[in-house]
Image (cartoon, rainbow, N blue to C red):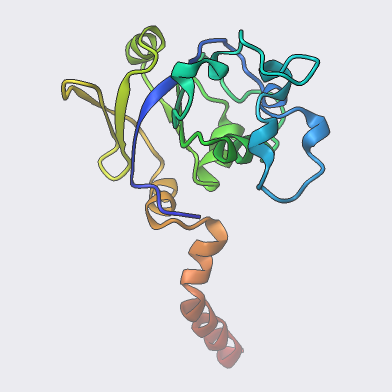
Length: 194
């Protein structure tokens, strides 16, 4: 996992509410244990027409959404099942951050564990972001700020351990492995004391 310190990008908007994980990646694509290639099936049933061509009505297929790394989503993003493939698919698609006024807890935890910044913003900021697709944003993970064009910034909350892992570019296992020497020393101390 690469460190996530700053993200600067235009925004793409999916204003629909209650976008569940099956809509992000349909269950039939959950047969893999690898993350690579899931971006091509991200939003598959919404993104493509039955003949496999791009659906022109899907917001992320529009030219102005191409290359956007920040997704502004409608309320209750990532609800439904707890599939970890959903953040994997978004990351492989090129999304680095998801902003919404409400993000499902399990999805948010899975996202943060995998290096996808999932940010809950206040209603006022959320409405502004939904109404202004394609705006350039700068997200600073260390300072926990989102800066709008013109320099106005607002803060967001991020659990300290998740923030640490994002900044260091480690998942939970990577964090534990960073402390392998201390763990081994503690285990040896316990063995000697027994």
